[in-house]
Structure formats: C-alpha cells, structure tokens
Image (tube, rainbow, N blue to C red; front, side, top):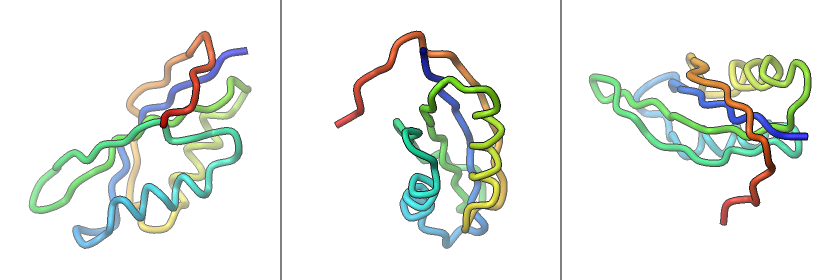
Length: 96
C-alpha cells in the first residue's frame, strides 16, 4: 500500500501569527501516521505570508477530506488550499 502526498497552502489569521507555531499545531492535530514532510514560507502581500506544506498520509479512502477538515479547524488558520495530491507508490523513510 502506498501513501498520498498532499501539498497545501495555509494562510494564517493575521500577519502577527507565528507560522512555525501554526505548523507545529497542525502537525500535532494530524492522526498517526500522517506527518508534515516539509514546509516553506511563501510571501503573499502586505507582510502576510502563507505556509506551503507537504503532508504524507497513508493511502485510505477519504483521508484527504479528513486532513482538509483538520487543517481548516486548526487554531490560527484563516484559509487553506489544496494545491496537489499525488500518490506515492512506496513508503519513504521519515525525514531527519
């Protein structure tokens, strides 16, 4: 069984939101064994930045919808957008 890689763009509530704290909060809300593989900050405008994150989840029916629901209800999250969903044919080792 493979995994899905979900790339999401997450916008914080305001410009003063600590983006690293927001990522850690989302990571703590994800069900096991889902994990945030990587993330980066992307400037938007007027001091606002978004976080683009790659979430790896096991291949299960409805898992993308569950991850979307978790991210949408996370504290400090204003909006999110699923940019891409890709199937990984093999499990990758966890990043260091």
